[in-house]
Length: 409
Image (cartoon, rainbow, N blue to C red; front, side, top):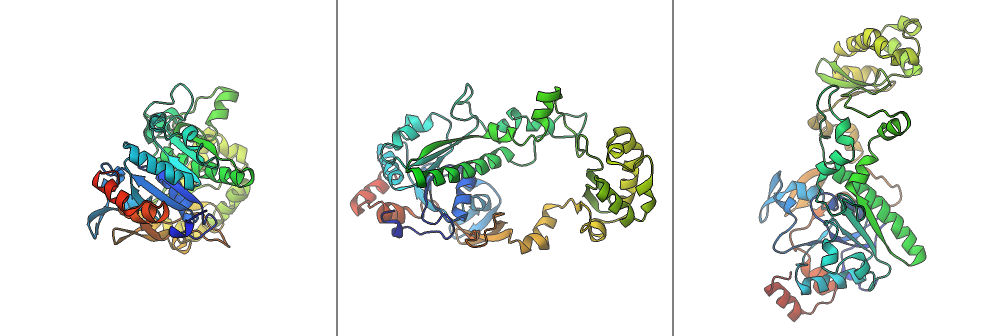
């Protein structure tokens, strides 16, 4: 790509791919950060009068220019920061010039917003037929609800996941993280990379449409086919599996563990490990089918597993059985961050934000020949304006000064 050497380039399998990031919060920024981790050059666009408002989200660290958001840093590492007012004609014109030289644009505005500014896919592909235009929204670009406002909770509610989560017999609970935002980001990144592969052979870009609601629907496991085949409407089950047993949360001396030794092989191993080998041949609980029976499970299996776990700590259970059967501690976040296995997997990395370093999660993508880069810096607001606009786009000094004076950048 012409003049690409004037931009800071990433290292990795996507080196040389240029992404214009017109997203904010998480559903979008996480997608583009994954692309940046893989080596793409991501240019994050923020409004000069209204930066990405997660810059105001806690927790904060003391940066060179005051408090800096570690939350922002966690989802924006490796990006170049450019401020651009897309409500102004000059701002829109500059974005069109950037897009003409880029490979992808990722946006997460409500459908119709970019079209009203003349920045929708149909408008921008005229100057760049190879453009891959990724739109992330609550309900997608088509359908009767497309233009409704949405948050992560909207997706959890309308995608069915909320109705499945919580304790049996009680009101449902939202999943305790922004799974709608995160899953939409995953699918958007996957679809974007598929479009890149196609573009490199066909020479043509395309529109990628990813909805949070659609994404959440795919996370409901067996619930859809249970309903379409047997008419069963899923309900909260707490920590129980609908038919696999023993498979769930069990109390131990210092917390809880997941115990999942439900197959005949694992059940036999568990009976031996916990000093009750005679249970393997017990005629009432010897087979998976018997242990899956709710009445038999409650009367026989649950007391056995509860006894095994309740007499030991998480560490003792993991040491005794963790290498042989599925028994794992249910870890607090403090225990997760201190997990030696996760440390060995490089899952906690320093990210710099405004000169301060915070420890954030790394990347689960492990590539042997072209490794992912997880350590890096999140951009200060408008930090790379001159590098991108003057150095790469070629805006002359007089025009650049005028844009600054008029609040375009």
